[in-house]
Length: 549
Image 1 (cartoon, rainbow, N blue to C red):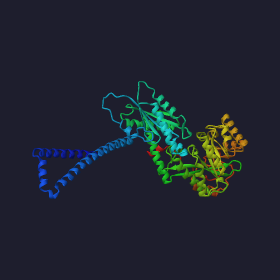
Image 2: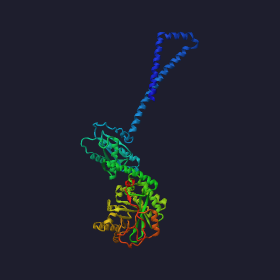
Image 3: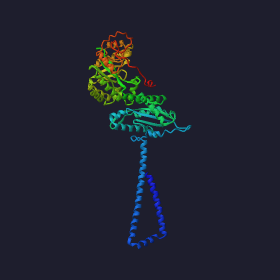
Image 4: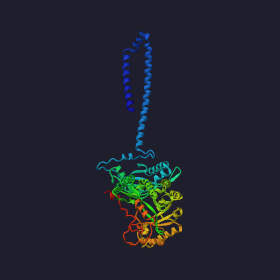
C-alpha cells in the first residue's frame, strides 16, 4: 500500500511539474510578469501584489514540504520492505536456534521431472532422548539453552549442509550422498556428538539422540515424504532404546500407523474410564492369609477384549500419557483399598519414566491424603532398571516416600541390573523374585541356588521376599521350605476387578489352608483351598492390532 501511495505521489508530482512548465512557457511568451505588474498597479487598492506574494511563498514552502514528505515516505517504504523480509525469515526459521524450520523444509519437496538425472540425498531425523526431563526438572530456560547447543553441534558436523529444527526437540539434516558414503556411520556420529554432556546455566545435563535415516529419491521422490520415512525410522530407533540408529524399511510405516492408532485409542480409553486397576492377591506363605493386593493396569475395549499392558504401557510412556494414567489408577486403587481390612496393603507399580520425576512423591501423597488412605498401607514396586536411569533423582524420590511411611519393593530382582550396591544405597522393605526363576527352579539346579541365595539375602537384610509366578502346588511347597515369605501367582488368583475382590474378602477375610485336595494337574481357578474359585480368570489379552480388524 505504501508503495502504491509513493508511486501515485511521484505521478502527481510529474503532472504538476509539467503544468508548471506549460504555465512558465506561456508567461515567457506573453510577458506575463509585466502584465501582472500592470494589473496589480491598476488595482492597488486591493493589495493584490501582496496576496500574490503570499501565495507564491506558500507554494514554495508546500513544494519543500512535499519533497520532505516524499523522502520520509521513501524511508518508510524501505523499512516496510525490510520488515516484510524479516517476517518471511521468521516464518521459515526457528527464532531460538536460527535454523530453518519445517516450513522451510517443505520448500525442498518439489518432485523431479520424470527421467531426470538427480543427485542422491540422505535425510536424517533426530529426536533428543531425555529432553523433557530437562524442562521438567531444570526449567525451560535450561531446555532452550540445550537446544541452542545441539543446533550448534549439528551445524558444526554438517557445515554447508541443511540442518533444520522441525519440532520441539526434533531436528532434521539433509546431506548430498558422496560415493559409497557410510550413512549409518554418519548417523552414529550424530548420536555421539549430540550425546556429549551439556553445560547450561551452571548445570550439566545428559541427553541422548535417536536417529532415523531415509534416502531421496530411493525411498521417496519427495523430500517431505522422505522426512516422514526418516521419522518412522527414528521412532523405531527410540523403541529400541536410547542412542539408537535405524534405517527406514517399509514395515516401519505400518508400525508407526499402528502406534498412532493405539495412542489415539489410549487417550479415548483414558477419557472413557476404560483403563482400570485389577487386583492380584499377595499371600503370606506362613500364616496362609491374604496380606495384600497388587494393582495392575487393565484396558478393556468396547468389544470386551483386553489390551495387553506390554502393548499399551510403552506407548503411554512415549506419548506422555503415563502420568495421567498412573494418577488415575493410583487414586482409584486407593479408594478401592479403603474398603479392605486394615491389614491388607495396596501394592502399586512405578515405571522408570515416573521415577525420574521429582514431584512423584508429592503427587502420590496428595492422593492418599485426599482419599484418606494411610501411607503405611501402600507399597510401591520399582524395577532395577528404573534405579539406574537417574540414580540421584531415584534416591531422592524413594527417600521421601520411605520417610512418609510408604513401603518400597524391588521388583523383578535378578533380571535387570542386580547389584548389592542397590540394596545398600536404597531402603527396600521387600524383594520380589522374578517369575522366570520360579518357573524353572524346581528342575534347574542353578536357578534353585539363585532362589535360595535371594531368600537368604532377604533374611540377612531383614527384608521380606515375594515369589512371583507361582502356578503349581509343588512350587509353593518348595518355596515355603526355603523360607520365602510371600507368594503371588495364578495358583492363588488371577488379577480381578474390585467387585470380585470385595466378594473374596467378604467370604474369606483370612483365606487359609493350603490343603488343596485336587492334584496338581487339576484345572486351577486361582483360589486357596476353596470349593468355588475366587474369581474366573480374566479374559486373555490379545494384540491390539488383531482386535482392530
